[in-house]
Length: 164
Image (cartoon, rainbow, N blue to C red):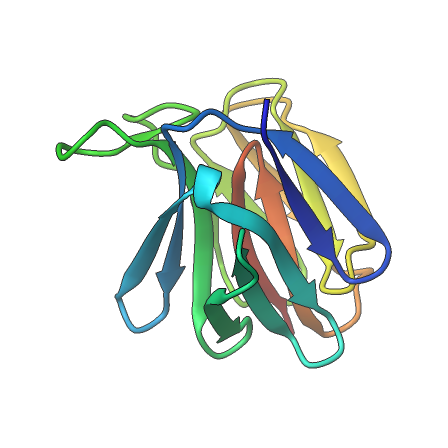
């Protein structure tokens, strides 16, 4: 089985087993997006020093390179269903709301499943917070975090959050 390597700074590296029909959608702040089959991707990198996100193909070419703070909205994993619509790996009908973003203290999450793991990472890959959703609607207290950009992970989805 093929694995996708996720490198976040120097502190965190995850491997994700993939099937050929799984894909990754990069959604940008300008409303555009980019879709790549996971079977074509060697790795993705997040450079915490200059806040760059890179998606690297099997042959080493860079498929995407964007600034996390100014250009990236979120990263979504989904099942590629041929030429038709895409299906999120978690639940096609579910929408998770994350607000307010940016925030100075509390971040509210709506539409979760009870027991889902919620994680907050720094851009250099350090796991800063980990919490299990106790209900459909929950909140995270980010007041202890420094002002900056962070990655919120809920299952296979990553969302950029900003702490003011």
